[in-house]
Length: 154
Image (cartoon, rainbow, N blue to C red; front, side, top):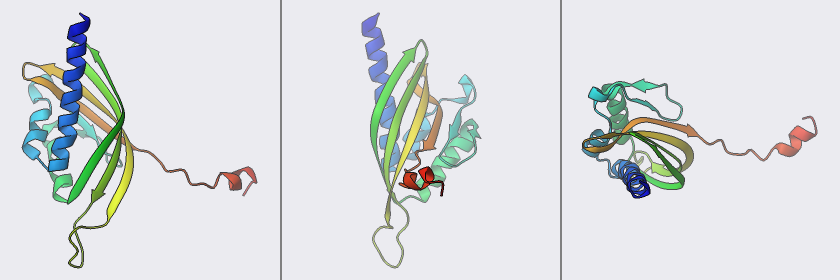
């Protein structure tokens, strides 16, 4: 039983990695393939700062929009934890994102921006492998460094 669990954990981690690699490449077809089919029920997605998106149409449109407006994106995943329970798996991680939008004034690439997002990806087992059921990303707020002012009552 532990070998099967190890294999499931590895398969889920590979599916999770494939998702982020497809985003980096702007590979919409792979992104689409990695999301659960409607036959299994509804899917949902929350991008940082966005409302909840439900259903394949809304979710996949959001990725098309992000890819169309992002010239460069790279994910460095840290704190990756995978938990498998039967036909469902949960992945939590920190997305250390480096991205750049469209270039301005003849530059080759727009300014690069770093962002930290904590993410939860829920997968379901299908005959075609593990597929994303839900994604939720929340921004990690930067510390302001104004802690001394708060202590002094300002």
